[in-house]
Length: 145
Image (tube, rainbow, N blue to C red; front, top):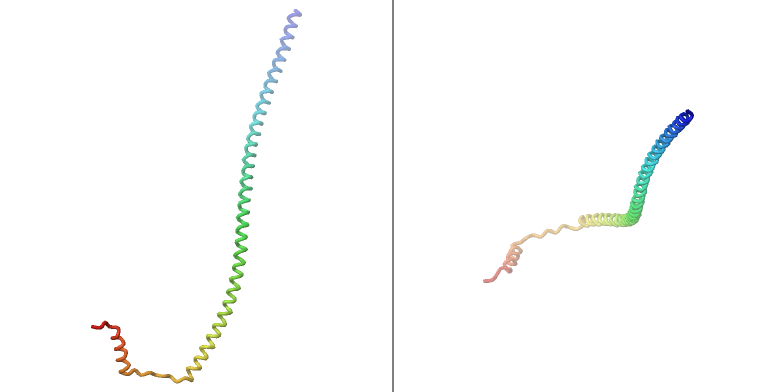
């Protein structure tokens, strides 16, 4: 009977070991699933990081292009600003010349008006001879027979 008790005890121990093995396998499977999920998450995060880095590089390139464009436009603005200043200076000079011309023209008109008051008006009478001379002058261009 001792043999039966030993066999029952050994069977109990084997059952306990089988349960422990089952639990260990289940735990191992659970750990493997967690590890696979973590690896998938890490791979996804790696892809997102690579996309973000590529986006950052594209933004850097665009930023460089925009800075060059900005520098070109700023240089153009500076050049145009200088030209505007030159044109304004020329405009002031032309305004002064125009003002002087207007003053001179007003003085000439006043002088002319003054001269008209002092000079008698000459009237030319048209005579018949004058009219015939004009008529003959017109005939001189006509074809001769």
